[in-house]
Length: 169
Image 1 (tube, one colour):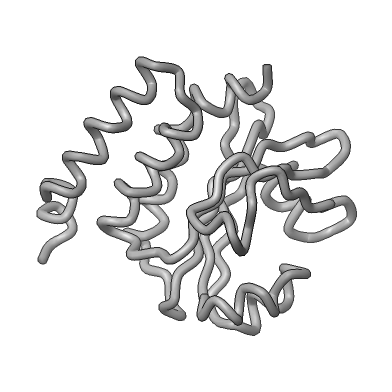
Image 2 (cartoon, helix red, strand yellow; image 1 turned 120 degrees about the vertical axis):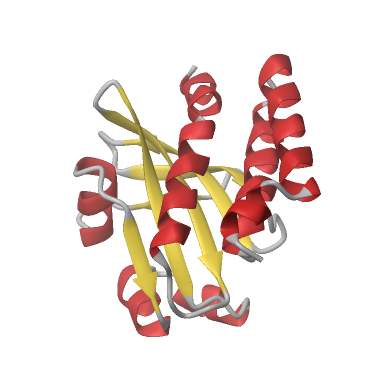
């Protein structure tokens, strides 16, 4: 099935309907869940997390997780002094990690990620007004990431901007 057909699938259209309703209700958790479902039509990811960012402290706090048992909302990570933190949070660059070695090199929780059978990651900085306000993260079982996966992750992050702004309070 082509990626255009995937985006026109009943699952994708239902996720867009849920996203519209979630934005109308200002329901942040529902926004992230709907975006997670929509992106899944292309990415086939196994884990989606959304993090709020405190760039000054170089800390991320999880707002949403598609697997709250393994990665519960409210969990946080310190990213000060890490290449990932500099790249994603300060330089606003998308991070793509392909293979277990890339995940091991950049993430302290690489063992937990491996236990979930995840082998690739896309981390998208959500930037508003020149400042990173969050990251939207997709982890997949497949080892390689296609350009179309990165494009979908970027689109998904843009769909979440209002929810991230609400989280900044």
